[in-house]
Length: 82
Image 1 (cartoon, rainbow, N blue to C red):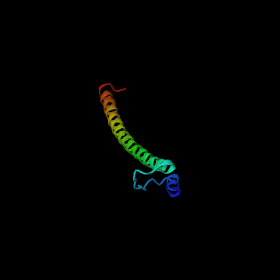
Image 2 (image 1 turned 90 degrees about the vertical axis):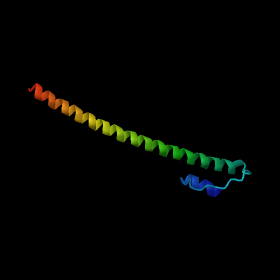
Image 3 (image 1 turned 90 degrees about the horizontal axis):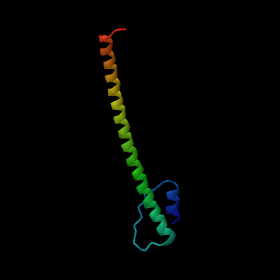
Image 4 (image 1 turned 60 degrees about the horizontal axis):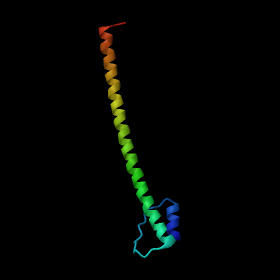
């Protein structure tokens, strides 16, 4: 149990311990905690990937908008020079 606790404390959630169904007490809590933390980090990873993708899309839309505004500005300058 100490080995599991140390690995979790160091951020190592890679161990998957064979569960027999007989686990109890603090040992069972450690196994549950490790599984939940593994799931949580997976969810965070997936969410950060989605956020990164959304940021890339937003940047592309911003660039297109910038080009459109610049084009409109040039057209306006041609029609109504200062």
